[in-house]
Length: 331
Image (cartoon, rainbow, N blue to C red; front, side, top):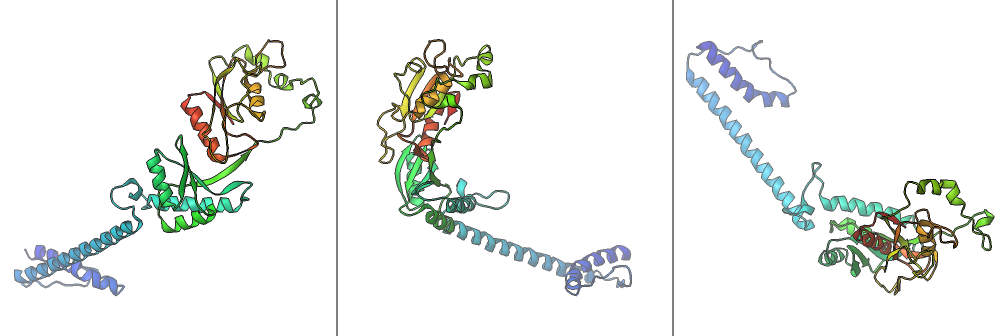
């Protein structure tokens, strides 16, 4: 009985004394130099056990109080950013990082990219591009950036930021005010084609050396593009061209804007028709050359009248091609 009581008292004393010893950088070794007298009075055990229980209760209550303060602090933080509660944008991942914080980091990275570009030639300075599921969502994003939604089609939104995008990116990232990232509206360019091969110069016989190089005729013994639709996202296409008129599936253009001023899907520049011919010009008609896949159909998507085009229009063109369920997209 005495040995059992001693063991219980030792356990309780270890609980009560351990925190004090930790603060003094020393630990007692129970059973080695520490004698617990056998008083034969269980009241010693009862008082010691009561004190231990009181200390344990106090510690538990302090922990709950601290956790309550932490929860209130988190709630206040969520309320301040406007992304608290059960919404997806306010949820925490396993690292405790909110969606708006992730987007803020993306915006800062985009700001760095923009700072390495030349406004006016590499991108449209006061515009931002993003994706959204609806016009209502797009209008919400515009409000979060303090901007005007100037166009929304095929899920692609374009913002008029009213200032250079690098400034808008910096301010929005600092405010943690959105869960939707935007990027600069790049100005994409069509490269001028050059070659030192005399058969590619104007006035030459237009020898199509590429077929020999890639063994087109050998490949066409297996497949020539029959049943495949290729989207040509470019300057449109000449629908009356002898090599293309029977290969045309459809011709469309991105929506008109004050910048692109596109009113027709017809090719007024020439590059899109040239690319369409490389893909699917007629074979064995005795005229000019042939395409690498003369059995394929062409879905021409016009995104520019000239040699430059906003990235937003290119993305819209891709979306249009995807909706058409084409098998190949050429940009």
